[in-house]
Image: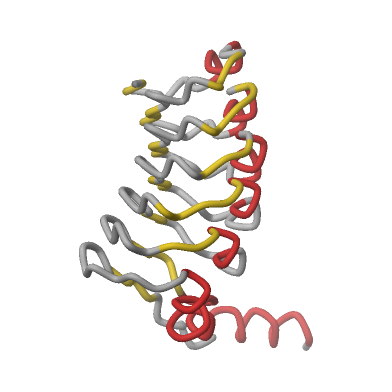
Length: 170
């Protein structure tokens, strides 16, 4: 019947391969929107890891990546000219690791990260334009590492008490 058909399709559905891109330290100097349009948009449904760290000449807005709904690991470390709001990452609900260390042009609040409850590791060090309460992270109950050093605009750390798995806080 219909229930058996659904169970059969679920069990024997072809597995879609997952994709990981490591573009770290390639010296790229183009816009993030170009990267999205040319290389990532057609892979978005399968992209689980994207590392574009230490491409210091890369520029553009992180909003170019709002279509990464299944991404688990996103690394922009050292991309000094990357800008935009953390709000752009609210749709990345599967996100487990986020590193925007040294991206001082990233701004916004941590509200968007509350939409990513699977977060385990977050590095926002040097992101001095991120402001507001840290409390939204209380929904990220799997958090084991959190680096907020240099985030001078953050306050209200009361919600940190609920992060029982937190092992390292900078």
